[in-house]
Length: 232
Image 1 (tube, rainbow, N blue to C red):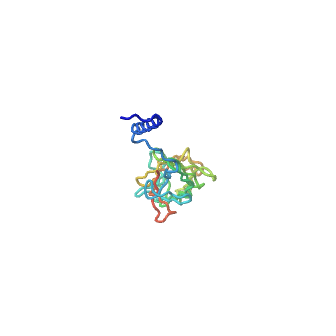
Image 2 (cartoon, rainbow, N blue to C red):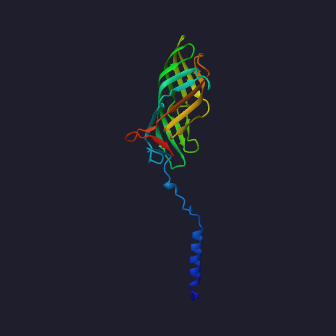
Image 3 (cartoon, rainbow, N blue to C red):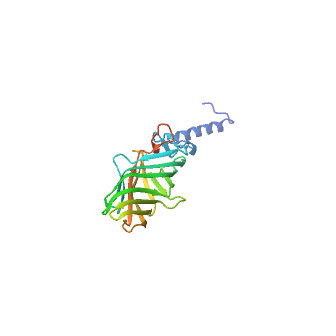
């Protein structure tokens, strides 16, 4: 073989070295996606679907064939049970995943409530006070959802009950963090045994209340057709 001219030999050797390095690189080595390429934490229609817009209203009823309960202990079935409940919120931020979306919970209502507490004949109302609440939805392990009190005060619930002794009012405030989980399988939010401590009212009121409920599907009512919301 004729020898390469002295001037071109270094260029040829450099080209061969580059080819060797390219061949040795793992097939999976690619340029990482920039943060701008990541989808948002909250999407509609499917995981990885269209972004939920900041300012959109979200709403969810109780999950089918379930009830919202407010029991006197974490293991009892004594207290108030509601066959209907609805939550509503407004999206404040929806950053790129991985991350945490934030919302303002603007409503949490209950209806068709009954009580099995000795001396209580019926439930006039069960309300959640001091709205709005802050809501964070994290797309980390378990898809945790956290509620926090707002400027009006801590998270608070009030039950007005008819009893053998007349109307009694029981007020409870959240003890610790109010946490739940999201689930893309049913586009749902679940809260289990969230502990409230009595903060006021009749001496006939139980000292504690433990709230459990599942809501879904969560829908973006700010978009046409109110598509279901997913966490990515």
